Structures are given as structure tokens and as C-alpha cells.
Length: 474
Ligand SMILES: C[S@@+](CC[C@H](N)C(=O)[O-])C[C@H]1O[C@@H](n2cnc3c(N)ncnc32)[C@H](O)[C@@H]1O
Figure 1 (cartoon, rainbow, N blue to C red):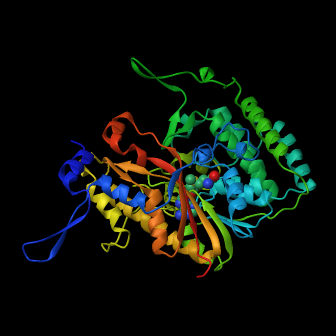
Figure 2: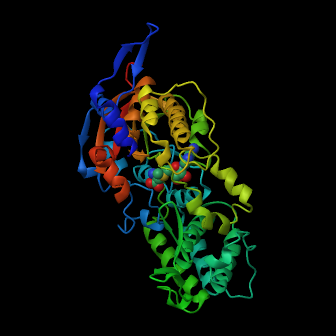
């Protein structure tokens, strides 16, 4: 029996929370079933379906949108969302904050609207991409970039290379000649002092890595391209047969770099000076303390979801290849700065229950025997504690009348839905926010096995935009 069925069968008779006298004469709470907890939470907010957001809450990788097309970042959203939020904001948008800025969708939109912005991300790879997309490039920068691209095209195997990364499975990820070409080009990029040209060149180089490697990002990890499942089990197919890989690694790398940089150069405008964002490579949960009080008119972001996705793990190839990490300890240390949204983080949560009671009630409904990791219940609590701390910071930095838009998806564990959208709304209200609306952008799918168990509750598996406001009179 699933935990969902257990919760429902045991508690069906008590749709509403009841209080019963115990034998000692005190009052004891009877736990509610999951469905009534979820319905109760939804009823507190102005929830409505708005499918016009369905294609904006995630990045459409092949949309060909300027800047968005530089780097395949599946976890991004569309800058259109920011334009809409700026238009609908009741006050003038003088500054924008994205505490989880990723590959820079918010920051790109802010720069294009010439509005100063601040972004935070713990992942140095996406921070480079976001910086490259939002610099003001001068004609001299572009001339330097073009001259370097010509030098890339005449690079050869006798030239100096950046040191070989210590990633143990490197030889399974890159063919030796591809690796040689990539490290030679990186050595040339490393010679540039930090700034516009270095960021642009590095962003382009990072963006081609996955495409010339033997791995691709899928789900919560990376998969090998040259491993195919057959009836007889997995087989390794020769490099030459992997789609798109010509025989010569140098030729392949040069061709991909030329295409990538050509497209990036098409997107930038030279000598146009607009408000460039400040991008901080640190945890926003802590770093937000440095953003001045009442200085932000719009905070708009998509945090990691409470779904066990490990953002650092999927970037391990880029992190090692860029030289930004040199040991397995380095990657762990960077990962530990992230929001506690997955079980690979150190999870230490206090016994005191400082989050809305519905969260603990829902966690109590989880059938622990169905969980693949027993740290999950604590991870859920840690996630909301971190988000509460972040929201406290956002409230303080917002100017009265300013808004906070959160794009977030709900998740399911052991037959129980964690309704992150309304839970964050509830936490925000406790911090002083008004909830303006919760727009349901789309409904999510689950694995078929999980789907059967979740059938009566699928309506709660959704991705929403939670719009909060700091009241004018506080
Ligand atoms: C859903 S993605 C944001 C994508 C972004 N909206 C875009 O369009 O590219 C969430 C981001 O949060 C970052 N992140 C996780 N924990 C963080 C923290 N504590 N502080 C800042 N960024 C964090 C991850 O590295 C990831 O890039």
C-alpha cells in the first residue's frame, strides 16, 4: 500500500483537523489526511490557471532567442517573464534582484531595459555565462575577440596547453585529440586579464564543451553518448559513429568554436552602454545581507526546486575543464554553498518547528519505506528553512510596494506532495508579505509508477508563479 493510500484510509473520516480530549484531559491533535492539508493550503491563496506562462517558466533550448541560445541551460526561464513583471509592477522598476541568477535570464532582460540589477549564483560556470551576456562591449573588445578567434583557428598540437584536469574519467569523456584542442584554446584564453574579452571567450569555450564530449546532461546527471542499450545489454559504439563527430578532433573543435562565437557576436551590440548587473558568486541566502535595505523594486527568480536536483553534479565536466576546480574537495566545497535542496548536502536541522505546521504534517504522511534515501524528510525541512531565510532578506531589500515573483515547481516524495508554491506563500505571509496571486503555469508529470500512486493528487503537481508584495504602508 502506498503512503498516500495509508494516509487516506486512516484519516478519511477526519477531513478536517479535529481536537479530541485525551485520557489525561489535555487536547491532542488528530493528524489530517494529505488531501485536506493540500486543499486547505490552496484555499488560502488566490490560485488560478494561466497557461500563457507555460512556455515561459522553462527555457526552450532551441528557441533561437538572442543570448538565451548561447548556453544550453535547461533550468533557465524566459526573459519574457521579466518584461511582463516590469510592465505590471505598480511602481517604477528602478532595480532588480535575482538571488538564483543561473545563466542570466533576469539579468539580460534587466540590462536590455537599462535597469540596474544584482544577481547571485554559487556556480561559477553559469556566473561566467551570465557576465558574458550582460557586458557592455566596446568596438575594441570586439576587435580583440575577432583577433583571438583567428588565432584559435590556426592553433595546432605543438602549442602550449592548459594543465590536464584531474577528473578521473576524463579519457571516457573526451577523445584525446579533442581534449588537446580544447586545452590549447583554453591556454590562450587564460592569457587574457579578467574582463569583457576573457568572459566572452570563456563563455563560448564553455558552451561548446558538452557538444564535443562523449556525455550529455540528462535528468540529474550526465550520460555517455557512445553507450547504447541493446537487447544484449549496453554496448560501446566507436567514436566515429557518434553523431556529428568528424574524424579529426582539432577540426571538430575549431568548427564548433567558430559557429558558437559567430552566433554570440551576432547577438551583442557594440558601444551601447546600458546598466550592467552586479553578479556575485556566492550564496544569496547569506550574501543578500550585503544588499541595502529598501533598494530593490522587483525580485524575480526561480530557486532550485525541492526535488533533489544537484546543480553542481551536472556541471562537473565544465567545472573541471575550466580549471575552476582542481580537486574533488573543491567541487564539494562549492556544492556546499548551494541551497539545501538535495540529499548530498550536509543536513543539520534544529528540532524546533519554526515552519508552517502543514509542512510537518505532510512530512509525517510520507511513507518512509518508499523513500530511496532516509535524509529526504530532513532535506525538505532544510530547503524551506533556507528559503525562509532568503525571503526574509528579500523582504528587507524590497522597497515598499515592491514585488517578489517566484517561479517554482512542486514535488512528490513517498506518495506525498510537497506544495512548494503555496508553502512559500505561507512562509512569506508570516514574514510580512502580501500574496498578490499564485498563477499555475503548467502541470508536471511524474514517472508512471509514481503517477498511479499520485492519481488523486496530480492537480497539485504543478509549476507556478507566486507573486508577493511588500506592503506600501510598512
Ligand atoms: C533554477 S536555476 C536558475 C536559472 C535562472 N533563472 C536562469 O534563467 O538561468 C537555480 C540556480 O540557483 C543556483 N543556486 C543554488 N543555490 C544557491 C544559493 N544558495 N545562492 C545562489 N545561487 C544558488 C544554482 O546554481 C542554479 O543556477
